[in-house]
Picture 1 (tube, rainbow, N blue to C red):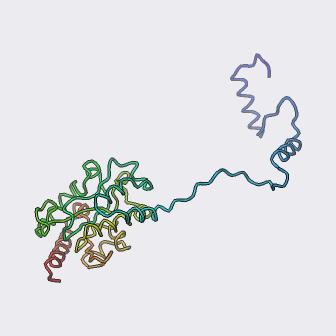
Picture 2: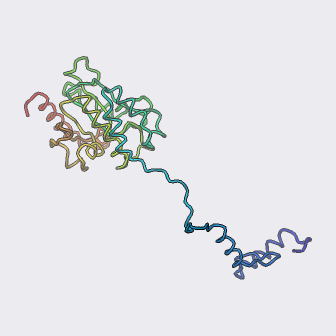
Amino acid sequence: MDSAMDWHRARALLEWQVELGATDAVGDTPVNRYEVAATLKTEVAKPGVAAGPVRGPTTPRVDAVAEARSSAESANSLEALRTAMDAFPHCELKRGARQLVFSDGMPGARLMIVGEAPGREEDLQGKPFVGRAGQLLDRMFAAIGLSRGAAQVVDAVYIANVLPWRPPRNRDPEAEEIAMMLPFLERHIALAQPEILVAVGNISCQALLGRRGITRLRGGWAEAFGKPVMPMFHPAYLLRKPAAKREAWADLLEVNARLKGRT
């Protein structure tokens, strides 16, 4: 190239060559590609060893569900279960959440409410159902004489979620995340020992019952982990659709009747 050629002229010449269809630059000296290929083949091949693709070390695939099950089953108390969940390394939601949201209310309560996953307020405070939806949930169960802050176990509720960490931007939990954390939920229920479960929302029904479609499921008793389950609308849905509170009230009365032994 002419040493006096400026940058603009050099670029114009290069663009002209590209337009003509040039795809490779030609060096000052010729290269025998057959010779280079033969050299590489000689260097890679070893006597008595067949040449093959070079692969790096592989990492064994982790069975996160099996590890969750083993960790959950080793917990013999709610506090031990909380510690095991907090130490569980395989759920990516943990990386984006501020803290674990384990439970609220009184362990040993006859009624256990299973929510979906923490939202922003829950992530900040470390307790389930503390935002607007949680306030509505409290009013709903107070209407049948139950409270998370009750002094007596007979009047108390216990609350937990399918997932203990907030999903980013409050998205729905993925099937893999639900499956991964389900052994912890099963152990949570076993240790809390409620008589009745209330599955709040679609995600809770998917985890407990293996089904979705809350508008079809609500109001009818089902069973999970040996416990009767009442699917109910999520209070966040009721805030958006106040007309659905009629069905929610019917479900609450059904739960109250079950607790009082009338069904």
